[in-house]
Amino acid sequence: MNQKNSLGLNSCFMDLNDPFELFKSWIAEAEKKEIRDPTASSLATVNNAGQPNVRMVLLKGLSSKGFVFYTNLNSPKSHELKENPKAAMCFHWKSFNRQIKIIGSVTQVDDREADLYFNSRPYESKIGAWASDQSNTMKERFELLKKIEDFKKKYKNEKNVPRPPHWSGWCLRPSSIEFWLHRDNRIHERLRYNKTVNGWEKEILYP
Image 1 (cartoon, one colour):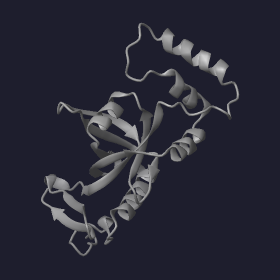
Image 2 (cartoon, helix red, strand yellow):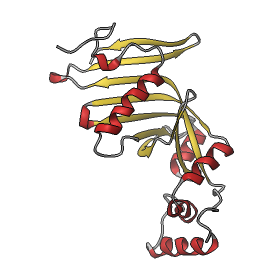
Image 3 (tube, helix red, strand yellow):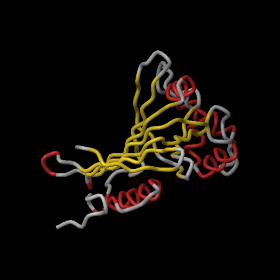
Image 4 (cartoon, helix red, strand yellow):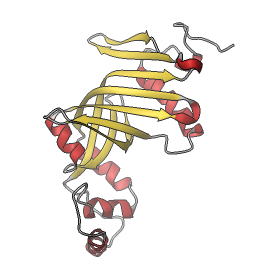
C-alpha cells in the first residue's frame, strides 16, 4: 500500500507549504527517469484577439519569483506575451506518470540575468540566436545557413559573442500550480496551490 500525505494523496505530493519546493522535488525525479528532456514544457499564450497558441519551450531558470524561458523577442510568443502578459505552462513526464500545470502572468527578465544565461550557451546556439529571424518565412534554407556563416565571421571569438538585443527571457510568475499523478481507471490525484495575499493555499481536486 502506498504511503499517504496528510491530505490522503500519494506520498510523492509530500506535505509542503511551498509549491516551488515540491516542483524541485518532482523535476529532480524527472531528471532521473524522463527519457527525453525533463525541462520541456508546453507554453500557452493568447493574443489580443483572443486566439490561443501553444508550443514547447525549455525551462532555463527557477526561483521564488517564477519559471524562466528564453526566446526571440520578435517571435509570435513574445508578441503575444506583450499583448497579453498571461500564460500557462504544462510539464508532462509520461515516463513516470506525472504532470505539473502552472498559470500566471509574465514579465521580461532583466538584462543582467539574460546576459548571464546567454553567455552560458554553446557557441553555435549563440550564433543561431543572431541568425534566426524566428518564425518568419524564408525562400530556402540556404538563407539561414548563409546568415549563420556570416555571423560566425563577425563573431569569431567563441567566448565573446554579445547577446542580441532581440533575444531575452520571460519569467512566468504563478498564481496557481497544480500537481497531477496518474492513477488507474482515470482516478487521478491532483493537488493545486493557489497564491493568496497570505501566501499559498492548498486544495485537492476531483480527477
